[in-house]
Figure 1 (cartoon, helix red, strand yellow):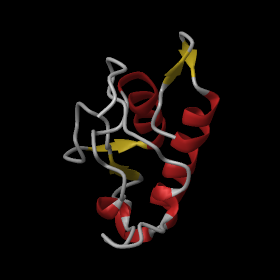
Figure 2 (cartoon, rainbow, N blue to C red; figure 1 turned 90 degrees about the vertical axis):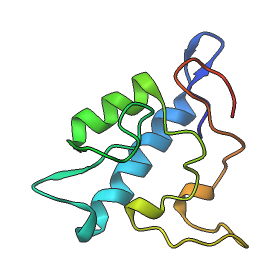
Figure 3 (cartoon, one colour; figure 1 turned 135 degrees about the vertical axis):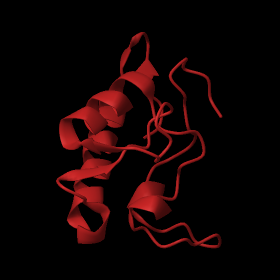
Figure 4 (cartoon, rainbow, N blue to C red; figure 1 turned 180 degrees about the vertical axis):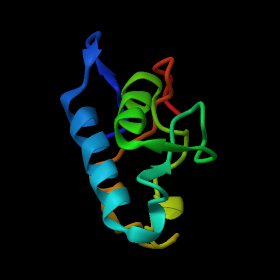
Length: 102
């Protein structure tokens, strides 16, 4: 899910994963503050609350914060042994906004 670009184009799997992340984050009431959630893009690093459209745009343009595979800031339980939450399905690596694998 974290591979943004494929053959010079936006990876459809990545786009679907961004939408899945946003749906998950907004489904947990404690994540939402005045209609906004923390933005896990490489720029804001879960430090700034953003509107849904802005989070989506940031993730599509900039990519996820490297190593943010277990969405603990957004309500997913921290599980070092089994990584079974929505963030762990089909993930092989994180890719930053320059397209470098981490």
